[in-house]
Length: 398
Image 1 (cartoon, rainbow, N blue to C red):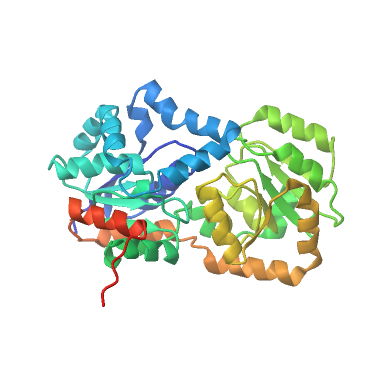
Image 2: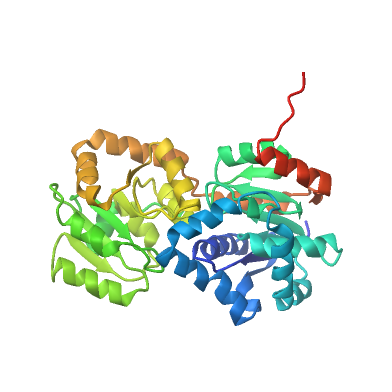
């Protein structure tokens, strides 16, 4: 077999797309069937204005206008609704990316965001690139903007998303339920008690992990204050991300040398922290959710972003993996109820273990290296049929 040249492209709108791409790059690089691997952020090849539009605007909306973000998510969740205008804008602002792709000459391209997928799809359509295009969806559900006019294969997180795509008219053989790719270290076992001890924690005490996310965007201080009201004896590791001011404020709330709290900044040891914990408290982003599931870690969901995180939350609640605090004031009540019922918490853990896919990256790599499907091009009639199916516009045949 000829060794493959692999190009993985993400977009740093949030951190999840990039982390999924990095997990795939690490797994591809370990495979002897691969000649070369490049993992790139599409926004590194564009101008500052366009880059800020994709990345900084998203963060600002998360912080200051989450309801608007949810409205935008819902309004744009129609196949091809914003497709033509968005693709023209993307192509206009990513000419250096196109130049790089053509120079690298990949055999396999993998996109963990819809923006570069649209660029590569256009190049294949114009016969300017001969490469396999796969799209890895980084949430449990799939928003309509992930739909591509030309592609080879989709990788999705759950069976329900594959069923959705099939009902839209995409061929079943083009859709692989892989899970969301996480770093291979999440599949490796740890000594839970030893890891707890290494962080200065009591190895036998119920342990929780509270995450503000990599960007430190979360009501962390409020949650920490509520955790101090728990009736049960617990210990909590608080991850403040790269937000040093938040870390200092949280430390001020709990006080110095408080044995019930361990306050950390950004950590690249989340696999250890998750695997040693009994409960995760935080927002259900796609990659965070996939990592928690890979660690068989039940979740306490707080403040999901309207749109994709709310949909992730729905699936986790339906599968019995999580509880959700609609009001942050109920956090002590919800957690105390769980800790009072060890059998219920154990059932949630088993549900998470059943639902998790720690080997998702390996599944994707093995599938793509062996894949020989030709590209599938959706013509105007097919795209129209997909839009009608998504809208529920069907004709019942007698």
